[in-house]
Length: 75
Length: 389
Image (cartoon, rainbow over the protein chains, first blue to last red):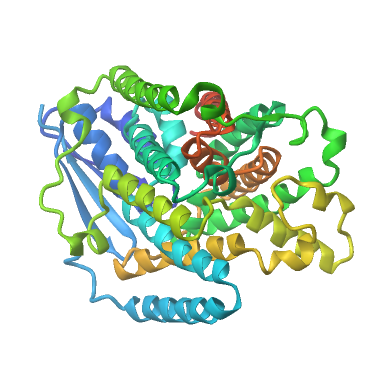
């Protein structure tokens, strides 16, 4: 199942905290798609997910300054 | 990753900004070369801050708030490279840290300033450099933070001596090698950096293998465009730039006195300037008002904004970003006030007092850093309890 988190207009540390809260609800093979316009999130959310959880995270630029960070829960 | 984004339409704007800035910089060469350096290095620092998303605030805040110390470790790495660079330049006689370094007295003002700065960066979501960088990226909330910084940085100068013992005059200037000698200073620096690095990794529960995430094949072009570069690369470039700055420009980076000088100039336009201004130890020039426009740090700060804007524009990342909730503007203003007030109290912000201070082997940098950490820890507790929903 895909979960969308809308963090447009939020800056650090809000996107990562929203993500952490959502992380508690997800199961294996779910995906979290974080919508963000915060440039730092493309670095620190991805880094956080990879080093803390070991889940793959992919960045997609949707439009100028807007990204989707797609996290696949693989365990 | 830019697949769905149209070909860079902002690249022309970025080029125009660069050309205008460089034209002004070249004009300044004959006038006052310090202003030229201010513009040039501000541009580079802003560019690399944005490219690596280097965020001092995150380094202080995220270690406790989300138990992620990647930025803190990068910050330590930057300070380490930077200190070694300054040390080598100093002992080889290329620079004199007594003149070029950021040596400021350490006292109660540093401690209180650090605590308030820590609170401020939680509320504002950025420190002074982060605010300037994000202004360049189009964050409207950060422009509000900047207004707060401008007002806040003017306030403690109203009457510094009545703030005693919090006055910047009250403390003692402590240059660490004066007390320990160079050998022990360097040994202690190395031990402290390695120890803190390990301590943070253990606290985070991150294994050594994962500390530096793999970033294979970074070509020169990838540093300039594309995905954000790794924090450690950013740290390395910033430290290198700072070493080049002290070598060529003969000073360390700072931000706040450019901004507070501009505030003082603005206040003076309404004939409301107080006489205490010229007493501030952050000011070398006696005449603050006429000096405001001749202060290279003002140009450094402006160029930093433009550098970040250019980096953001050429990567199609520029966007006017409005905060989601209107209450954020209030937090931003409050955070900015705290940042500005505390920076002027501690005689420097995260650049002038923390980065430059520690790199110049001044005890005040360490004390300021420690109390920012404590302040942001306490602020973070309040933030997560009451301000985030």
